[in-house]
Length: 225
Image (cartoon, rainbow, N blue to C red):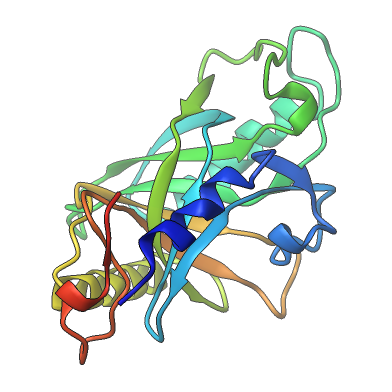
């Protein structure tokens, strides 16, 4: 069984949602000055549970048949924003990770709407310059607790689907509740990096958190949210 009070005391020690990439809370971020911080709630052989504070992102929607097509178009649209396509004409530092909202019920030969999101640096979390492109907008992401599964290589349609299904299966096996209308595809490296890449699948939790392996009974490893 997990000690609930000890675990959720982690929520009280986080003093920033976005911070330096050389911090212990951002070991996955190796290419950007700042990274999204999180509190690790628990870790099992199959997944992690993390808590993220509320943050502001710059976002764009792309309709496409394939994840990689949407990611490419959305990345360039948002990259233009941070390199000067904003009302102040300022350059904004790239951060990590990039997260993509991926609909769960997408059919193979049907297009879907993907939402690509860049995390705004700490200096722009309160206020950021307005985009000049009407297809670019701001998203206030609420605080959330997520189930996470990581994998290497590239975030492609097939790999994203494979690992999201693996995570969903593992969560279902432990009777964990989560939002299943969509999941997030999460990337930490630039498209130019070829080796040692890190990607993640996130499902947002619902209700009690489950930190159990399939062999454990969920009642022995739940934490009240």
